[in-house]
Image 1 (cartoon, rainbow, N blue to C red):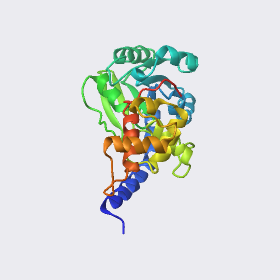
Image 2 (image 1 turned 120 degrees about the vertical axis):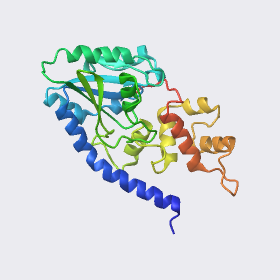
Image 3 (image 1 turned 135 degrees about the horizontal axis):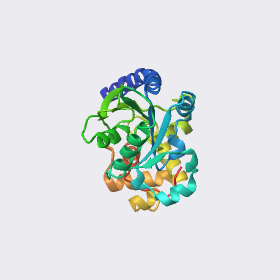
Image 4 (image 1 turned 90 degrees about the horizontal axis):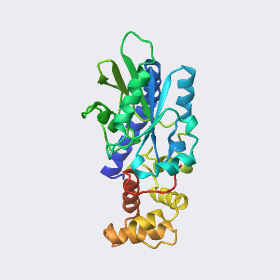
Length: 279
């Protein structure tokens, strides 16, 4: 018999699937109604958080786009600029919602581009991006007050929100969307990838231990260094030692591997673990 927790989890996943079917339609509606698009990217994972499907649609509709690189406090900007072709990410702005940096420059960039658009009524600025890249937090900083809903869960925003940036400029917030061609509930590699970049919440992903193994393979030594644990690049050893260290134990005294792995993923997604490598 499934436990109450399992039933709640299954119900939440069903609701997420139902909501997710509506997301692409909402985002397409935002693209159609926007003059400028802000694509919010995770500065640590620029390539992996770009939605090329939507970028092609933006280009097709001849809309202007600004690339917003959030979480820039977790990277070396100079190093990042040498790793990516920023001529293909122009115009762009580095920001950090957590540190409240770069938002003024972004606001001025939006205003400057808005002036190049010939329109009699208000300019609409749509905001798109992967789940958990910080879209709503960015909007709150842009408008100077807490209006856009935020949450730790990936895909927290459930619908379009209209918010005023200036008397002439409106912001349209959207739910986070993973590209249709990229999304999978079966492909373990795709699931791990989206969890690493925050597209799937640490609390929702199945087999979190598998994601930790991928993390350790791609970011060698980062987790061991952060938690001060010698694990010989073995995810099972890391989870076991950290579980013991944190007291994440089952009634029998064994390490609760699921809880420990989700703890690591939570800290990773919240940006508490700094990385040197950018994707």
